Image (cartoon, rainbow, N blue to C red):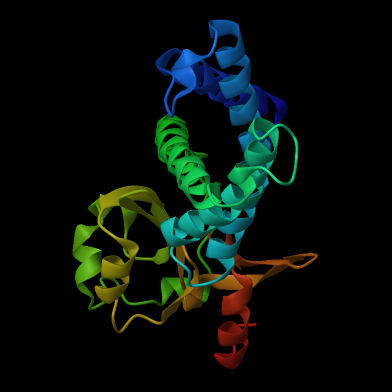
Length: 260
C-alpha cells in the first residue's frame, strides 16, 4: 500500500466515523456533539488499525489457498472484532476490567462492533474495488517472435473457447487472467476481455494442455518458457513476455506434472 492509498483510506474512515457520530446509533446520540465525534471517529480509526492488517492477511491467505475471498474476509472480520470489542468495552466501562461491557454485555457489544465492521468492510471493498476496475490495465509486453515449435502448432484447436477469440488474435492462446467478471485472454498477437468466469473458460478449454497456476490465472503449457523466482515467490515466464504468478499451493502440482 502506498502513502496516497493510505491517506485516502484514512479519510474514508474518518468520514464514516463523522456520519456515525451525526446519526448517534447505539444510544450515543445523547452525548454532546464534540464528544460523539471524538468517540466515533476515534474508534473507527482504531478499528481500521486492527482490521486493515487482518484483512490483508486474509486476502493473502485466499490467494495462497482454496479459501474463497469473501469467506476469508468474513473470518477476518469476526477475528478482528474481538480485540476491538475489548478495547471499546474497556474504554466505555471506565477503563476497568470489571466493567459489564467486558462481562455480561460483551456478546451484545461484540455483535454491534462486528456489524459496523462488516458494513464498513462491504462499503470500502465496493468503493476501492470500483476504483481498481476503472484504473487502466497495464499493457501486455510486445509479443516475442514465434518459435518453430509455435509455428507448427495447429491453427484453431478443437476447443469451444477459441470461437470466442477475435480472429485478429489468432489461435495461439498463452494464458487467461481473471479480472472481476471477465477473463482476459492473452495470445501471441494481443489480448481480449471476454465476459465469463475463469472456471467456465477452463471448461471450454478441455483437451488443451494447460493448468490453473493461481486463483486468477490459467496457462497453456506449450507457451511456458521458464521459471521466474523471487525469494518465495514463483512465476512462469511465458512466450509473449509475461510472467504468470504461481500460488504456493499450486507449485507441487506443477512439479508433479513436470512443468518445473
